[in-house]
Length: 187
Image (cartoon, rainbow, N blue to C red; front, top):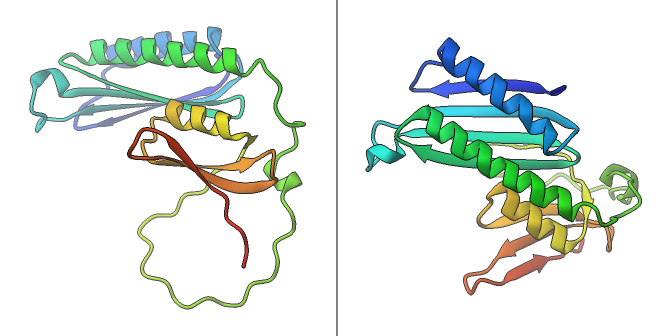
């Protein structure tokens, strides 16, 4: 595997055995989706979990081919949690790879397609922002945005650059099981 592999642990120690096991297993993910740029593995021991079968948590996040795929599994043994998360990741990669075979967009980045922003006057001070996130927007249509939202495990919403309208949109999951689309317009 050519991409970078990062392993992080919370409330547990990554032993040489766990590290070697992860490196061996994660490096095989490239077979399912070539072009992986970065893989992050988060291992957690949660002593307050209700069930002993949910105490060991393995979360795997893969960045590559313009997508972010994430899986999380819990088990009573860290190796079982890792195996379950890797199996789930392989299924997601196969599903993602199959759906990517159809064409989308012209390959232009969101920055190249987005119109120049208009000058905006200084806004009023905002409440304290506890966290900021930056991410790259990959041009996609509404259906691909819903797929990406599901692949990431986002329950509520997903922000994306709509290749059909040339604007940033938000797709969200509604209580009745359907999806909604927010198409913001500048006032």
